[in-house]
Image (cartoon, rainbow, N blue to C red; front, top):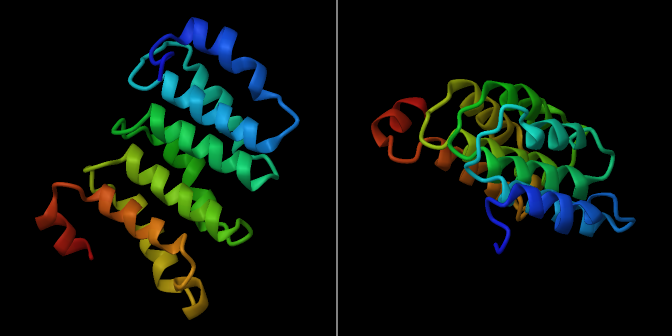
Length: 163
């Protein structure tokens, strides 16, 4: 939090060295830190989106989750369609783990908070309806509900009609 909104010193000095660390936990933490540093900052070059959307294709679940959380921290409430195009397929791809899909749902809930975006809603509801009994008991399944709840935050009348 000391480097919040200090993108020059934060990325160039303190965080960059951890972005390519050999430990995936440290890398994922650096992705989240990079997202936090850039929270609420508008930049024409948009380095956060460029860097972290690239990491969504990583084979490691931890790196995908770090990138998803970093994107959600930076773009919370922004309703950016380009991020929907990048993250929505992660939710719908059954090849991804439950953990990655759940965090992707949470990320879209944060990015589209209070917007009642129909495409995000349909993706999350589709996953919830297709879940088997054993998947519902998974602790990460609750993140789908949280993402859906964030999507309709403050919009109760619209939520009733959608659900």
